Length: 210
View 1 (cartoon, rainbow, N blue to C red):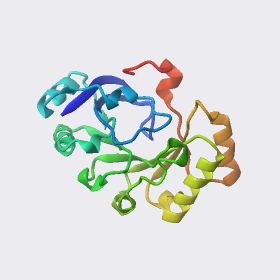
View 2: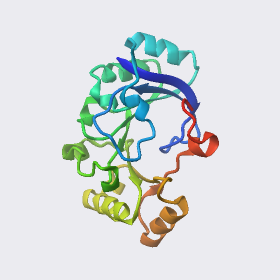
View 3: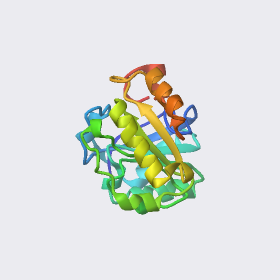
View 4: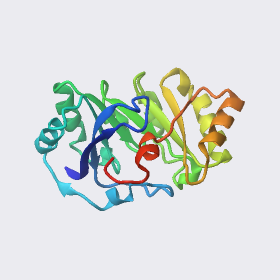
């Protein structure tokens, strides 16, 4: 597998925010989002076996691991890596951009699916059949940059009844949108979503490896 970095930190996003978590950031991505904050994962990486990855994560003595990227579903061994962690008793999260079949990563892995809004430059790239793949433990995330993104995302939530299937998170692109503004939009619409903030950035800023 091509691995960009492995580190231990506080989980900054999802409903697991605040928990100690090991991160395996895989290299390579099929999108180039306008607001990407891990662009280095598109080009940096070194080959590591599944066993080597698992052995390093085990030194962290954690119980939660997230496999992220880049786009982890571009790598054929991602499913095998998930299975190894599950066999060891980990809670496993996979963050994916939803352009690939999430059925390759079956439950009980928790799939955090980032549905790209128009401001990302990749609105409409989500693989539609993935809606039918979602399980109750999964989460859908929308990164919101402006009011158009907000209404676009909310329309998808209602169209697919996502709030009845998974936890839905709306997260502000804080370079363009204040968390307060997004919170007020959510309140104003009684939107059936959860406000998601990148906790690690409030703690460490844009520092890498945290």
